[in-house]
Image 1 (cartoon, rainbow, N blue to C red):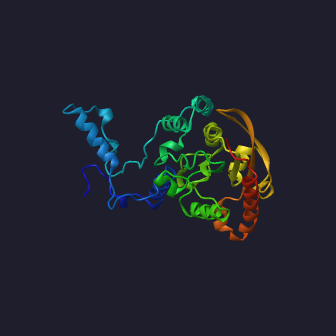
Image 2: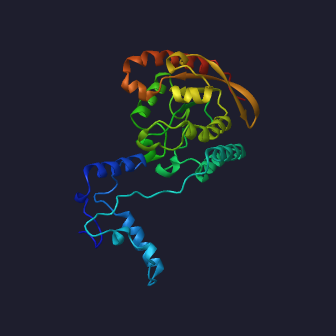
Image 3: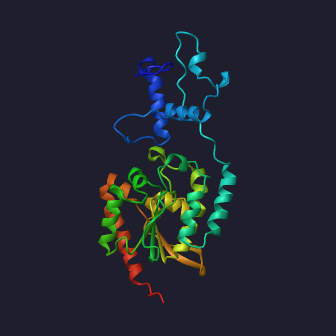
Length: 295
């Protein structure tokens, strides 16, 4: 039942409703979490009114519907969130906080407290990492998807299940690998992260790699390869080629080996290219087998 002053949905045009729906999807509200819809705006207004008690609201605080001319519906508007800090300031803060972290637990806490990336506001939770932090190899993808956003763990959806099978093919599982993403929050609607979002998050994943101190870095997909390895070529030219990757670990500066391969999500769309990834996995297996035991 509609409350006084509320406008029925059928009073709005299809274009207006579609526009609002697109806004919700862009903000990451693309999953139903209850059987019935909740009017959170009305709930917030009721809570605010309860806090004010019997204080009469000023005219400026009256709903827009009360001031609307008779017979005209109020405009359909969406809430406006406070803007994040400017990108340059956010990137500087990210570098400072990432550098200050002395272990992975501190880095995760720093990310939890970091508000410089707008993606945090639309994601359900931080997706930090999975696997063994002491592993000799780290796999880094682009960003979490819907399943990862729900569970707070990277690569747990269909692409993650394929990654697990890829690891098993060379005798690995998540106890022998560390898994992360360049972006630790899901972009709304699984869209591609913007260059600004990537630049802001980059210091954290770089520090994550350094604190993990692996011997081998595997970039999953073009985005991770271009971001971390600084390559400009597409993934088909980049994959399967070993390059050097410098890190500043707690033990000091060192250079590790890095290789890029196709992202599991891409393989779900183009399964014929699994043969290319198999070649890359064979190279990875050889490199892992050639490592000397850690003292």
